[in-house]
Amino acid sequence: MFGIWRTLLALEVVATHLISMKIFGPYAVVAFFVLSGFLMTLIMQGSYGYTQQGRWRFATNRALRLLPAHWFACAVALALIAILPAFASAYHPALTAPQTASEWLSNLTLIYPSLYPQEVFPRLSPATWALTVEIFWYALIALGLSRTKTSTLLWLSASAGYWLAALLFDVGQHAVYGSIMGGSLPFAIGAAAYHFRTELETAIGRRWETLAGLVFGRWGLCLAMLALYAFGDLDWRVRAIGNVVNALLAAGTVVYLFGTKMPWRSLDKRIGDFSYPIYLLHWPAGMIAAYFVLGEPYHGASLPGLAALAVALPVLLILSCAVVYGIDPLVETLRSKVRRQAQVARDIG
Image 1 (cartoon, helix red, strand yellow):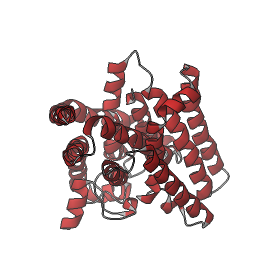
Image 2 (image 1 turned 180 degrees about the vertical axis):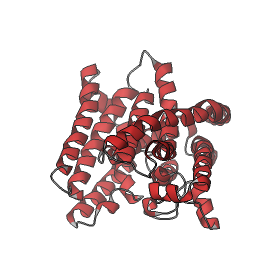
Image 3 (image 1 turned 120 degrees about the horizontal axis):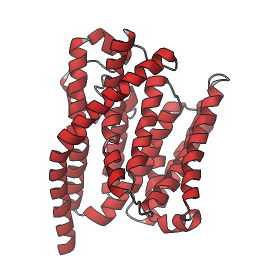
């Protein structure tokens, strides 16, 4: 259902970080937030419910989904840092070993203690700042933020007001991207898309051309923004407005995919299984490739950068396979048990 979509977004993040496709990664992260807003509202409404036990099972399932694969990524990063400490920190400044108890705790729990988690160092898996944002909004959704259409519309309105104020007062990119509050609008858009999915499905239709228009329209937006970089530094407000359009296109894509029965559902799921490990492990894979191909901690839009990417991708695939085929089957057994318990509790209730 969403597997290929999630993996495409993860690969956009890879392209941004390893070959400097500047816009694609931030827009992919926001599209992930939209998907999470939709899915977390969906499963709270349909699977877990808003009881104390339901919320606890939701939190348990989220922890099982996020943490084991993340711990594997941390272990890979720590091994690389131990072997090549100077190279690792030069490749990405967040790739240093935690020194204090609080640094270890934040790295192991994915909760970086800041309203701006992107600015917290060290991060053994650098891209996981976005997961702190996700966890914050997961918690509020579980507490009932998107429980009804009314509460969701109020949340959406407040989030839009926050973004509008940030744009009007020119407070800077950090206010709407890389921060916990910046994640509010895309999460709210995703939650609203869930509640109004029937109306949106009617509006966008069920034609494959619609899906192509949404996906390629979003990529066209990214390329247009990227082209503006050729003329100098792109104003953060233009990027932010583009990201709102990106979020709306992503919401339409999510609604379309949710209401469509894919003929290759099992393949879609298998491809989707790779999205999270790709997201977690692309920095270590890139570092390994840079060391062996270039001999220097470089990543960027150039022929050497592309050569390193060509090596990084198979390394990333191997590391991701360790998660998909080694860790995920064990974790999925536990997650399935939690889901069954939640369903039994809802049936009884």
